[in-house]
Amino acid sequence: EDISNKIMSGPLPTDPTPVRQRQHQVPSSSREESMTRSTPSSSKHAPIKASRSNPNAMIIKYGSLLLLVGQMVGLVLLMRYSRTRHAGDGELYLASTAVFMMEVMKFCLCLGVVFYQGNCSVTALRSELYKHVWASPYDLIKLCVPSFLYTIQNNLLYLALTNLDAASYQVLYQLKILTTAIFSATMLGRRFSATKWASLVVLTCGVAIVEISGSSDNDTSENKDQNRFVGLVAVLSAACTSGFSGVYFEKILKGSEVTLWIRNIQMGLFSIAIALVTAMVQDSAKISQKGFFVGYSPIVLT
Image (cartoon, rainbow, N blue to C red; front, top):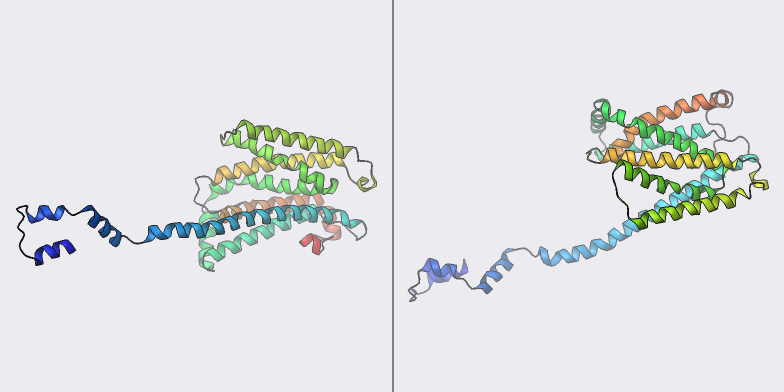
């Protein structure tokens, strides 16, 4: 536009080339300047934003990893402590009721998150629940399998920690990495390199060594009321159910627009019902005699 204004306002050109043709013969430097002026300076600021976002992303990534590790280690230690401290403190709480209460708490937490995501609107929460629960019976049926397996897995974990020490349980339960890899290869068609399979073999050998070394100490006073074989079977079964249910749940999530919180609510409906039936069938006599919350303490609630 500046060049055309100069041409129109200046003296008549003496060059026989037509004006339109000369307008198209704008020097490359002028075109670059005009493009620089017309385009925003986002390209200059893009590296700055990226450099600023990278440290935040790294902090979130490794912070989440540390929190996850702390949660897993703390959970195992607290569960083991709560299952062994009853000797001088009274009754031992029922694992089946603990699983039921855990499922109820997870269900309420997911409801709270969905309620918050809907701008704290009861109408929005009711609409989401109707859309993904009442109006989606097929999705609920698909989630029966992982709901059942997760509930059984939680009961097996309590049984394993009752009969194994925390260190042995933590090492043995890492076999869920092997089971997850096997189910991922068979159900999802994933391919793993030879190095990854070799590392899984090393992991299995390490677990076997821990089990052999732990079985030799089975006659100590600390393990008088424990059955290491029962704990071993329980933790291996939990590792298998964890691998299968995790891969199955991932397969359901793929290609679905439903959020993870809604999926957990759908699973929670069946998990609560299955956990309640398990508690009534397994410990109905104890619940009727001593109550549903027998042996509960702040440690158990934590």
